Length: 310
Ligand code: AVI
Image 1 (spheres, protein in one colour):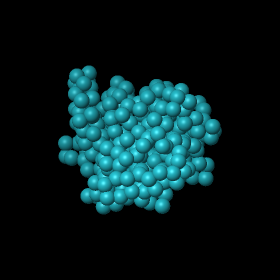
Image 2 (tube, rainbow, N blue to C red):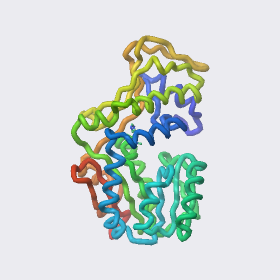
Image 3 (cartoon, protein in one colour):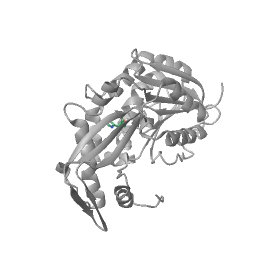
Image 4 (cartoon, rainbow, N blue to C red):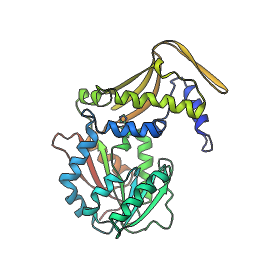
C-alpha cells in the first residue's frame, strides 16, 4: 500500500483480498481504546497484570542495569501510566512520550509534568510502526526505548525484526531497549484471554466494523458478525477473526464484497514467543547483553538489551 493511501483506500484494499483483512490499527478508535482498557482489567487477560507484577518485583534491578539519567522514549505511551510508575526507580533525565495520537499524550504529559517537574518532557505524535523520526529535541545520550505490553506481538515476525532494527538504529552508542514480550503458554489460557466470558474482546473486535463504517462509508451490520479469538499453534500466534453469521453483501462508495455464511475477516495476530526466540529476535536486530525477567509461571518476559556491547 503506497504511503499516501488514505485509511479508506487501505480498508477497501484489505476487504477485497482473497483472505479479507482489516488492519488491527483500526481497532483503536475512541471506543476501541476504551474497550482495550477494559480488556486489561479482565481476569482472563493475564498480560497486563503479569507484566505489572514483573515491574513491581524486578523494577529496581532493571533500574540498576539501565542507570539513572536516561532519555526514556516511550513507544505507544497512551496515558503514560506504565512509564510514570517507573520514574521513581529509573529517574530519567528526559521523558519522550511517542504515540499516534499526540493530543492524547499531550494531556497526559501535562499532568505528569506537575508531578515530576525535574524531568524534561516531550510529546511526539508519530506512527512509529512505520518510521522513527526523532527530532533534535530528543537527547541523543543514554536513550532507553520503552516498549511494554507485548505490542511487538502484533507485528508479524519479519515486521517485528524490521521495527526492532529501526529502534536499534536510533539507539546510538549508549542506548538500550526495555521491552515486554508475551510468551507461549497453555493454549487454553491463550484462548480464554482472547475470547473472554464477558465478551469484552468480542465487542473490541466487532467495533472495528463500526470504525470501518465511519472511515470507509461501509454498511457493515455488526449483528451479522461473530467474534473468534484462538491460539494457532502452527503459527505460534493468537488470531482474531470476524465470521459472517449469514451470507450478505457489504457495500461502500466505489466497492462491495459478498461474504458467504462462515466467511471470515482477519483482524489481528498476536504472536507469542519462546523466551529464547525473543532474545534471538533482539540479537538479530543488533541488540546485545539481553537480561530477562519473568513471572513465576514464565508467562511473560521483560527484557533489557543494549544497542552496543558494554
Ligand atoms: C495491544 N496488544 C498487545 C493486544 C494483544 O494482546 O495482542 C491487543 C489485544 N487484542 C485482543 N486483546 C488484546
